[in-house]
Amino acid sequence: MSNKTDILIVGGGPAGLSAAVNAVARGKTVRVLSGEHTILSRAEAIDNYLGLYHLTGPELMKRFEEHAAAMGIIPEKGRVSNILPFGGAFMANFSGRIEEADAVILTTGVAKARAIPGETELLGHGVSYCATCDGMLYRGKKAVVWGLAPDAAEEANFLKGIGVEVAYVARGERPEELNEDIAFYPGRVAAVEGAEGRVAAVQTDADTIPADALFILRSAIAPAALIDGLEMEDGFVKVNRQMETNIPGLYAAGDCIGAPLQIANAVGDGLVAAQQAAKHLDQKAKKGE
Ligand SMILES: Cc1cc2nc3c(=O)[nH]c(=O)nc-3n(C[C@H](O)[C@H](O)[C@H](O)COP(=O)(O)OP(=O)(O)OC[C@H]3O[C@@H](n4cnc5c(N)ncnc54)[C@H](O)[C@@H]3O)c2cc1C
Image (cartoon, rainbow, N blue to C red; front, side, top):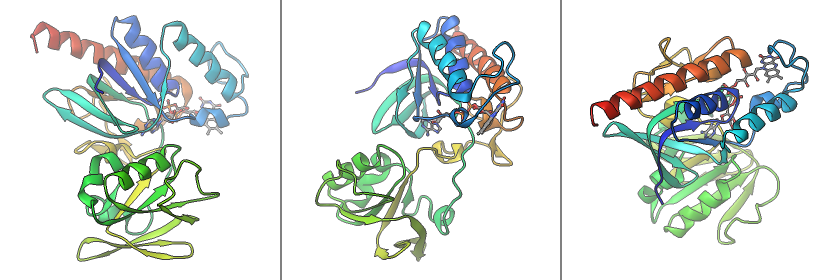
């Protein structure tokens, strides 16, 4: 099902919720698509956020969420795995569903995951972060799914359903929802090996699994892997003072654009990004685009 909204916000931390309340305050429709946890939930005490002294991270986040909810904004939980600009608007793959918007604000925080050996070299040549985007390429072939996100087992089931031979790697117990025909390997993926520029095998802690593809399904995806052609600088999304990226209609705010990695800064960036996104949409409407 497709649902067009004015502004999609990817990430429901301080930057994302600030962008959301400010976009709504400017009369725009918004949807906040977010993973389960913001990094803020790990903070024991916040002493430098003006007006709300000495709350824990979870307490402060609860205040932000209550504020957003009072304005009708309830973040939808899931994972955005791909964003595609088309005809001046955007399509986002959100936990397997395609969502459409006229503008997008990235507030994904800091992507902490370090690439495994072979991942960067083989990205787009058998390594993928999105089963619903690239699954069809591996119909009748072998794929390993590395399940690091809550919806990963469902994505593995999707691949199985379209005719991919799937092996599933994850820490802990076999997920209950995993299709019983999918082989389960407890542990982690240590490396992906290539031959002639394509994925040939996936190494776990204990096994080498011959495979044509590796789907790495992390909760957080580096912004450059989310959207083709996004300009980065020192590992962060490159923006100007209006929080504009190099892609028209795409904005970024908060920790994902770099230091200082602080709440007040994220909240301020979110405000600017929302204002600019709203302005962009108003200008488009004026021109009749
Ligand atoms: C232990 C600790 C203590 C801290 N103490 C302080 C302090 O005292 N003062 C202070 O100012 N700051 C502090 N910080 C920093 C502060 O938490 C961050 O600066 C702030 O949370 C950044 O907000 P953000 O919205 O940019 O990113 P985040 O809070 O990281 O939120 C990012 C959101 O994006 C979601 N997301 C990411 N990728 C995707 C995807 N592909 N699809 C869907 N959702 C996605 C995540 O699930 C998350 O909800 C602390 C941080 C830590 C870890």
